[in-house]
Length: 115
Image 1: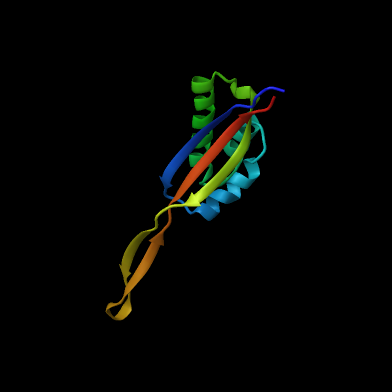
Image 2: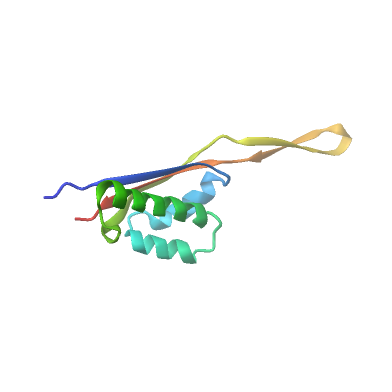
């Protein structure tokens, strides 16, 4: 049995909610690299753009650092952690301040060879 090799990529402080990113990550978990790229290309969510960049970066890391072929890669692990929340204030009636929460997230993708 061959030793399975992995490659990883992380993108931090993405200005989108981690809940919205997880909705897309659940669709590509366990799929091949090429199939995941195709899914991300045609899904209608805004989170697909940053996820596509991280996936492509992980595949390039596998190719350049480990000498692996991109067609042999499988999406082994994907997750989105919550990042720091940007807090902004909007003026409201009678001199009150209304807090606006702008969430961020960290996206991690780990690819593995399928043989």
